[in-house]
Structures are given as C-alpha cells and as structure tokens.
Amino acid sequence: MAREADRKTVLGSVWLREEPPPTRAPLSRDDIVLTAIKVLDREGLAAFSMRMMAAELGTAATSALYWRVATKNDLLELVVDEVFAAALVPPTDDGDWRDQVTTVVRAAYQALSEHPWACELLASHAGLGPNYQGLTERLHMILRSAGFRGTHLDSAVSAIFQYLIGSAVTGAAWLSVVRRSGMNGSRWASESADRMGVDAEHLAAYLDPGSHGGPEARFTSGLRVILVGLRPRQIS
Image (cartoon, rainbow, N blue to C red; front, top):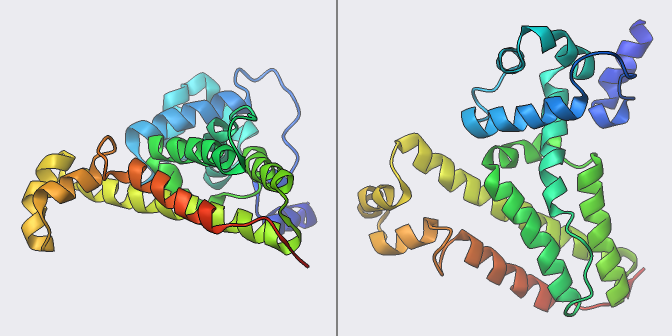
C-alpha cells in the first residue's frame, strides 16, 4: 500500500495513473471536469477548491467526486487539458502549411483566451493529457508534410508552442490586472495611461480583443512572423 502511494507521488500526474473503474456513481469524470470548468469560469482559479466543487455538485454527488478525482491537483490537470480539446479542429488541406498551422494554433489561442485561468495552470499542469498531445501531434503532422525533419521539426513545434503559450499568458495577465481593478478595459486604460506614460487610446486598443491593435490581432501577426521565418529542412 505504501509502495503504491509512493509510486503515485513519484509519477506526479493524473495522466500516468489508471482511471478508477466504472461504478454506479451518479457522475462520470467527464461530468466533473465540465462542472469544474464552469466553476473556474465563474469564480476564477484563486477561489477554486474541492469544497466548492462538492457544493456545486450537491451532497449526493460528493462521494463520486472524490472517487473519480482524488485531489484538486488531479482535477486541475484534467480541466486544463480539456481546454485544449477546442484546438483539435478538423484537418484541412486549404492553403499552404503555414495557413494550416495558423488555423490550429489560433484555435488553441482562442480556447485559452476564453478560459484565462487555464493560462495560470500551464506552467505546472499541461503537457501529458490527450488533447495537449493531440495538438502537438497535429502540428508535427502538418510540419512533417511540409518537409520538416529531425531536430528541426521538434524545434519548429517548440517555437510555435512557446509563442502560443507566452502570448496567452501575457494576455491573461493583462486581463487579470484589469479585472482586479473592478473597471472595464476602456476605463482602466483611461485611468492608468498617465501613470504608465502611454496614450490612453492606444492602451485601450491594446487591451481590446476586437481592435486592430488588440491581443488577437497581435497574436495572428506575430505568429505569421514566426512562420515566415521557418523553413522546411532537416538537422540531424
């Protein structure tokens, strides 16, 4: 028994352990994960707890929660991987390989933007789940078809992922500052611009997802810069 507990501790991830067997419990693990996402969207990561989850699920389902997901850390691993499910858009042959990569990576960026708490988890809770791995494999497939080989293929995928995650984390950090102020983006920009030494209109546009200078537009143009700089080749 002690050896089993030690093994679980060493492996350190819910994805490296077997899922509990089926029971008559009223909830599946998928039900719990979807509920957790709803709670995190509403309450944020700082307030999130297993006690809050139990209250959300109801007394009758509390035992199912702990049977299906043993710890808060396990649940956070599950939910952050579920966010990446939205990035697994159907493969397309439209455009060249850069257009195909852009479609996939923009879907991932959009998913992270819709759940900014997920960005806070990426440093410690991402990388081993099936959706994250599926996204990685999708990028590998596109780049292999374009002629990328060897370590250059791995380096290209790493560069794209690091840009994706870095952009999402930066956007989430700005959003977090604005939300803590209790203001909307436009008012916060107006109140903060002088202290930051920038133009208020420019700052408001920088924060506005719908503007030409906003986070989504910057992400897309920056991704294009990276992809233009990549060339199919092989480095052994």
